[in-house]
Image (cartoon, rainbow, N blue to C red):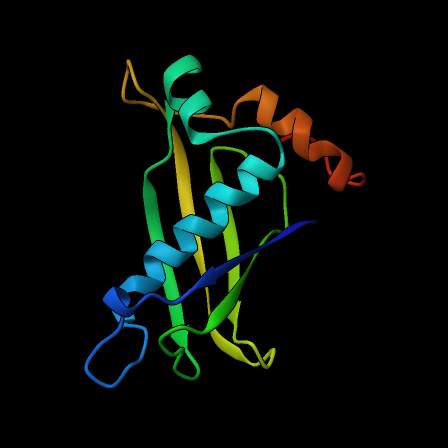
Length: 141
């Protein structure tokens, strides 16, 4: 399993009239978590899209709201991969407040698509190689 944490402060522009993080912004926080997770592996979306010509469209998103996050609160976005990706990759996300209480949790499933053919492909080999050390008992999909 590979896990990553990223801290993000709730900005005023992201809140509703009650001072809560607006529910629609959680998908953005999930994206921040997965982008920063890949960056922590020295692998970026830009590299995947521009150099490898692979895109990652979202195929599903599940989100559970547990308690509100508030303006100016520093949140911890914990993102994990529980299995090596094949044609799909699933990011598990948990967002915690400053008291380490769960605010939100969910999953985002994406597939890998060749940008030229628009066909689904397997995860780029370079990504698999970077993840393999964290999945010693897994076979490459």
